[in-house]
Image 1 (tube, rainbow, N blue to C red):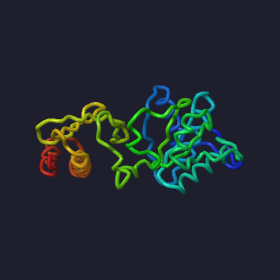
Image 2 (tube, rainbow, N blue to C red; image 1 turned 180 degrees about the vertical axis):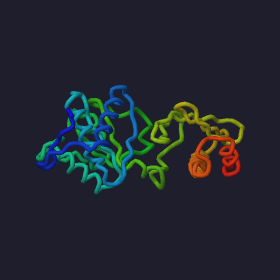
Image 3 (cartoon, helix red, strand yellow; image 1 turned 120 degrees about the vertical axis):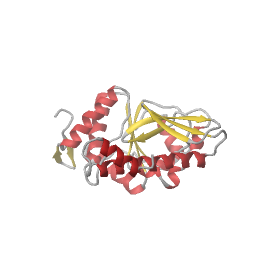
Image 4 (cartoon, rainbow, N blue to C red; image 1 turned 60 degrees about the horizontal axis):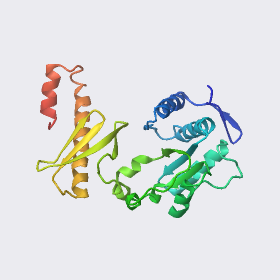
Length: 248
C-alpha cells in the first residue's frame, strides 16, 4: 500500500481496488514512457486516482511536472480543490489554473509551479506552426473528460494527419494517411490505423471516412455479442448468422 494513502481535507483515504490497480497500471506505463487510457464510470473516484498518480510522480521524479487538461471551468475548479485538499499543492499556494494562452506558454517554460491546470480550449492547431514553446521539466499530462473532444467543435481540432494519436478500445494507435486513386478505406493492423483517401482530400472527407468506419465497428461488435445469445461458440452456425446479420 506504499504511495496509496492520502489525507483529503483531514480524512485518511486509501484506494478502492479499481483505483489501486489503476495506479499500478499507470506506474508500469510511465516506467516504459508510454501513455494510456483509464476508463471510469460516474462517481467512481477518478479525482482520487489522479491525486495518487500526481503525488507519486512529484515525490519520485524531481523533474516531474503535471499538466491536467479538462474541458470546462467548473471541473477545472474542482480539480484544483481536490489537489489542495490532498496536499499535492499547499493550501496557500497560488492557483495552478491557467487563465490565458500567453500565461500557459510562459509557465511551460518556467520551473514552477509543478502542477498546472488548463482547459482544452487553450490548445489550437495554429499553435503547431513554428517552433514549439520552451519547456522546463518533464511533463506528465492528465486529460480528464477526454471523450468530449470526440464530437462538436473540439473534434474539429483533430486534423487526421500522419502519426496523429487515435484511441480505440482504450488503446493508442498511430494514424497513417495514405493518398491514392482508390476507394477511401480504413484498415487496422497492430498499433496502426491506415486511412486511405484520394489525393488532396479535405479534412471533412477524412473525418467522414473515419467516422463511418467507427460506426461499422460498433455495429459489428453489437451484432457479434447479440448473436452469442443464440450461438455461444464460434461455430459454423454462428458464422452463418454473422454473415446474415452483418453488412461485412
